[in-house]
Length: 344
Image (cartoon, rainbow, N blue to C red; front, side):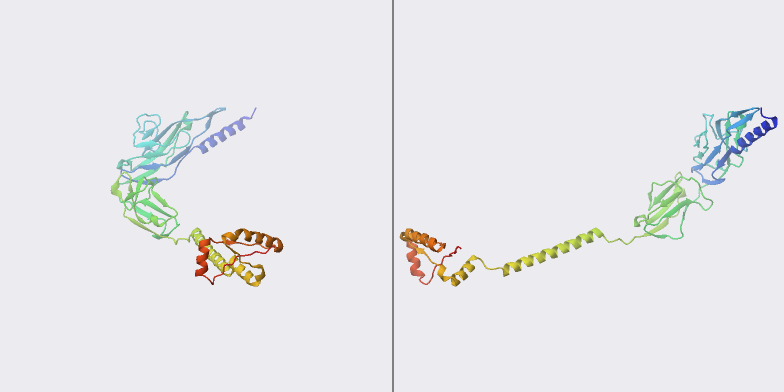
């Protein structure tokens, strides 16, 4: 068995561990609100896991969550703004937490009666697990204030690609989790948080921005003018490449056309010219055969005999008898030659 002094020591350590682990944390100790607005009080808690009852360890479980106003402990018959055991909670107070570790409270339609200190209390299945954080959250309520826009930079002129944050607030204090309406040039934007983040600015983001509480349009701020300088457009490389390619293709085509034309002009003339030169140089191999109709058969026999002897081809030109006499009279000086190709 373990000595008695050691048992006492272990019991004391368990109690310290349980007490140290039990806590409630508020994200902020104070916040501001405007009448008619919505305010959110972020909250988290760590419950006591167990307690030591004599010689045994007893586990604990949170079974109830409560929010109270202006009460240091929020227990017993103290009026609750929200009570997880009640079905008659005021609709303006919405519990956004659970029984595991979240205890956030949202207050809608804030009024002057909400100018107070709010505290959260958790209760377990044994009074050893009950706990209230005494500090709480202080809410300061303002009636009909004008919102204003604060900017994350001292400049009002920006270049394309930069980032800027616009915050909707008042001169009295900074709001947390405020529901607002953002407008640009009089048109509502989709953002509804107290901060408007504008990243990768372009010239289209230039304009006059205003903000107001979503529940109270009379709180609209003065216009904030934002100017974004348009960036110099980078050259369109694909377009330039296409133009260069087209010019090169046109130049190449022109060069090719000029080359073909020059080659045709300097090329040897057709067969008729060659035949004429051959006729002059080789008069012995050129014959002119003009046959009358009744001489066609005899001429053909002579040509065949001559071809066998000299291996020479003849081309005969025939004329009808009537036309022959007329052309012989009208054109006495014209001589008709035929192209003769010599074989071998």
